[in-house]
Amino acid sequence: MSTVISVRVPKWLKEKLEMYGVNIADVVRKKLLEELEKIEEEELEKQLEFLKKSLEKRLDPYELAKIIDEERKKR
Image (cartoon, rainbow, N blue to C red; front, side, top):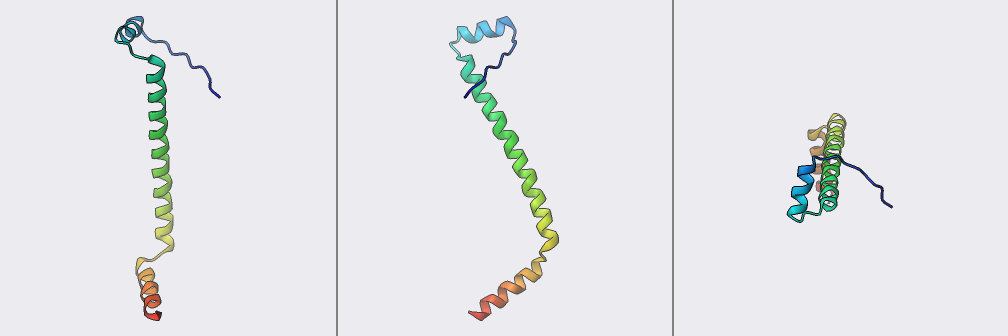
């Protein structure tokens, strides 16, 4: 499913793009997708940072290393 988006641009810009054979709709679609990907990537980075901080409070790296060493010795 798709929807229509209208954008107002200066007449000279549209004319120049058409003169060079630019498919304006394709360019707009591509740029909108790029912007969405950028926003989603930034959101994921924020979520990962939050999880990292949450886990740092729960896991002591030294305690984790101790547990790993003990498990290895059991083998």
